[in-house]
Length: 365
Image 1 (cartoon, rainbow, N blue to C red):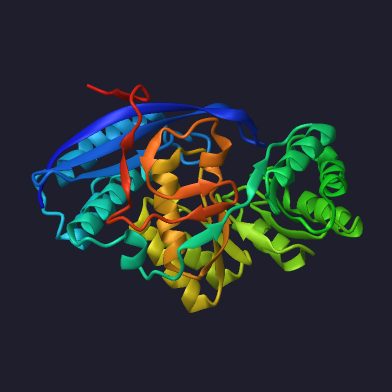
Image 2: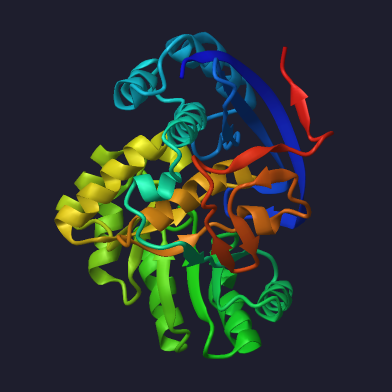
């Protein structure tokens, strides 16, 4: 099976409601889609969201990295030579992790099709179903409480609550959410780097005194402040999850070695795809740490690849793959089935993506 051609598209899918964090506001998913065609007729699919404020990858940067570096690196190559090909992708250009992730997942998709095996089984096959949380955007306490009630009515029992915009309101926000949903719903919070270390400890201590029973706090301090992250982890009453501080397997190992966080969040768009994500999983096993699998605001092609990874290993104990259910529509054909919090991985060869409904893809010439 030889790679014959690569096509690039843009795809836009509206969100149910605006997505707001301490870093940005988004009203619709606007991603770059990669279609890798082979001489035997199979197609591998990949996707990359432009998340410049986190990864540095804009639409132009993703398309440029693909056209100038990544596509030339894989054209004419044999899919059967998967590991050397994946390494070639990682070496083709520095940074540009989202573009690399899109190509990486398309190659895994084709390899699974070549040998007629689902990717999650090829990678370990620990389970076939997972449950995701759902994100509550940062707004006024009253609006967040209403959004939380709506999420619980839809069947979610784990909420990921965004905080950090006007930190003086964060405890009030969580009090309103907890009152709205009761004690049986798990709440994890995500500050998206918004706090200083001392501010984080003060806010987390206030929340602890209010008996909010938080499961974890995600990336409370700026990503580059590893010492600050470690300080929060050592003193926080709430377990700490590193997100933006972990882009590579090397980043994960540094955090594990320094115990700068209790857990790490793996996102394919940060680490460059499944190949590097699997190395983070392996390192987590060595150091006895757990992982979350997360996503940016992405449609189902790329989140589907994250589902394959989540179902491959039980080292990933927390799931934050709500991208498709935050969307108003799902134009992606095949792949995992997202039934609100319940996600069923696809058992078709590769990743099971068959294409995208007509009208959603705009080819980039």
